[in-house]
Length: 372
Image 1 (cartoon, rainbow, N blue to C red):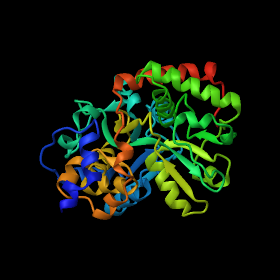
Image 2: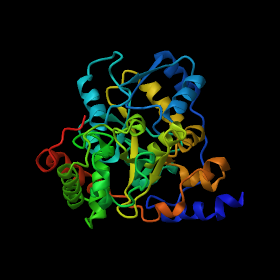
Image 3: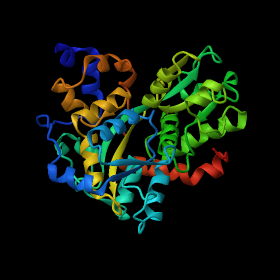
Image 4: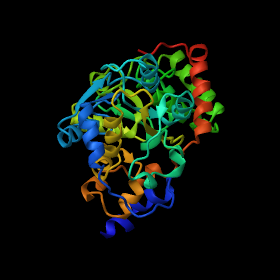
């Protein structure tokens, strides 16, 4: 038990993360039987943009299906980006069929605008009070689910020396090697990668970080180091993208899946360490609103939050559950070294929005690469 309160890793995570706030006692309420019955009557839940190797979503989904056997989980476009998710809601406002998402998992920068546009509906889960206030909408339109930091995944068979800084990516030895996981005009993960790069160049989070991030990628593109291919575990293993900038939890899961073939190193850069929060929300036009609410209860339960931690994602209730000794020790021991996170920056929603605007509007003009 003393590991939870006294280890260096646990102390660092609790003391240095900017979204830590005072939390009440741990909640563990089960969803009401009325909600379970209503969701089961609907018989389906439609999710979108949930790759099974992202944050251990495969197991999280499997556990939901095993617990609620009367609800079919319809999985749309696992590789979609945040903008694609919101467009799926817009395009299916009057559609009660299988192409209309019930729930979305969004980059934090996109959530306030989506709520303002009327794309989301409010709902507060039973464990609402344990979600830090600065990563949730007060009215329940969206709420933080997990977070990680931007890092590099490196194929060690092809590159004996891994980059430790964003500036390293411009070196000649990384010619034709550097990739992002999505299109920076629409992917929250790619947008935050550029923000991280910009901050490493001395920029403040916001418009400046977007501009500086674009500058670096323009340089990488000019010297031939940037590869306009969607990076993933397979492209790293095949040597198509020997270096991929992505969330640490994705890279760590890919490393485990590759199992040394090829060996893959995950490096958190020594500067520009941006922590990214993703949020959950229910579509305002959800064909299965009760199944959507039950899904949220599952995600924010002890089981759901532990499922995300298994995928190296720090869940929103991490600090409350850590304090209560809810996490298995073996999971805590698998976390990256605490010192890698000590410089982590948690940008405000306003900074994220300004950064996103700068990148989305400037990518074509400044960088000009078509990522696909």
